Length: 356
Image (cartoon, rainbow, N blue to C red):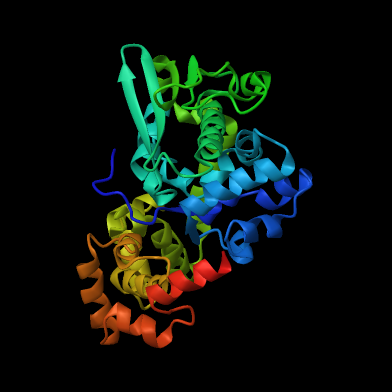
């Protein structure tokens, strides 16, 4: 599924840096120094629900590859991360019946994780194709990000279809960055380099495999999630709903029905339990949006259009009307009054030039 518009300032969830601290350290790098040099805040590693610039993320991967002397940094970092890098997105595919349904759900919800790239999923006879498409192909360091995505998706498919699974072909848009034997060990096949797109090809027969018996590790994640929801005390329920909303809002899929489905409960049951706690789904949705709006308004690099998308609004005007209803002032005026990081764009540009 292709988004109707490409974000002006594409982001990626801070979850994308899962394991960065220990992996970078293992290669002799100082993680905090690498983040600083890539213009990323050091505290981002402690805020997995936060966002960071997709461009800066790619630049970080490239910088680490150069500084560590590890040309296949992205590929190896992806192997280190594994499927845990998807975080709560695994919960979004937990109730699908087959590998094919799980991949379709991944494609539909990938914008939750990364607005700088899209997942495609197509069938051509007996061949299934899973593609990773970057919106801005000229982004510095994009080759590292594409290889990381390939190694993570290969591991996801091994988790879904069984550890013996391997692709028929892997295509990469660039020439090899390092030893081709390392690619073969990581991906299961030697990639086709300088290809038109970044893509995995595999036998479509695996799409019909049932998830429940395909891999015990993923199945256990699903069982534990459902069990935790069944044991969740009522007074913790509003906090859990807020957590899900933070992930679902950027995709525009934060309706009561979608949240209830992600929690494996009936929408009416969820609403009733929230009412028993003296609140409602709509109240939690508004509170979550207000909290997120305050957080993102403190970051001057995020445009109003992007902020509106992060909060699940179709456009900036819808967000502005809601914000004015909440606080009696439009977002830009609030930002000027309250944001410690706000300054006119012209001054920010001059400041950036002076730093460079």
